[in-house]
Length: 425
Image (cartoon, rainbow, N blue to C red; front, side, top):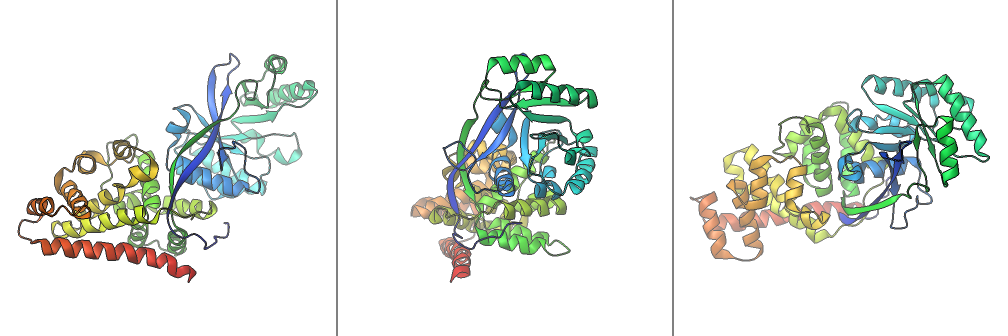
């Protein structure tokens, strides 16, 4: 895992970039997209970024937050993974057969990779070898591949001969040729038996951008410390996730990917953490560390989410722990629209909040929704509205309870941010 610098511990919203390049069939119809890590609008792979860093950032900022279906329009996806990512079981953060995992040409520890690929293939995962160069080091991994990718070489006859050789040795494997730049090469490759095609002749990588919110590094370090223990403390994990909007958003998105084919909904952060289980949580934290997160976020917006979350939880405490946790989640998510430039109704749908929490977040329905509305009334100093809402939520309480809860919630948010700044003092 990469070393984590302690600079920039405050949470930050920023624009995230990813490129996708289409892969075509022989009839030039779309087959899939390859997803490519980008750091800016320049639409080139950033100099000085390792395979591990690119893998971690691609997984954490794109796949976990946005989801494969949004990035590829429900087309198959090809994703490059570093050696460490494969050995750390990053593919298990995705559903089997939801993507093709590309083993990059710079891969090391090949015997270990071979063993891990064998294990993952038994669970239904698909693999491609990227930029195959014909060297002997790949001999044990080639029979395991569902796809083999080649780059066009000149003269083109060299690539054609490689295609025919692979077809004879691995007739069930799909051959993809990259970097095709003209019609003549395409026609010759197709005649040689190439199955799929990729390159500037068809389409250059298309740059996509979206709002992003990254966790603070102290949150990452705290989670790393939690997962370093032999026995995972789920309560401790939940408490750390609950303090960071970026972590919450990705945990919910990850759970949503796991339950997409069921009718289950997520009602609290603790439920999401428990649903994922120990292995997935440990893999999630490895992605965090590998992607070197922690740039500055707009502090006040993040602090507002924490304040609302704690305030709602305090107001709903008399109704029990479950209700308070549900309220906390509603409060935390209530600022995500501003952070991610995404409508709240889309957030509610993609995070599988269910009808109760969705209606609370969107329409202020139920106790959770009324408490969110109360939090907003307090922020805007609408005392009459706040008093009317209090009568609905806790009829026997006076406004002193509301003022105290807001005071405690602001202190809680300040304490979270003070813990961040104390690391660099």
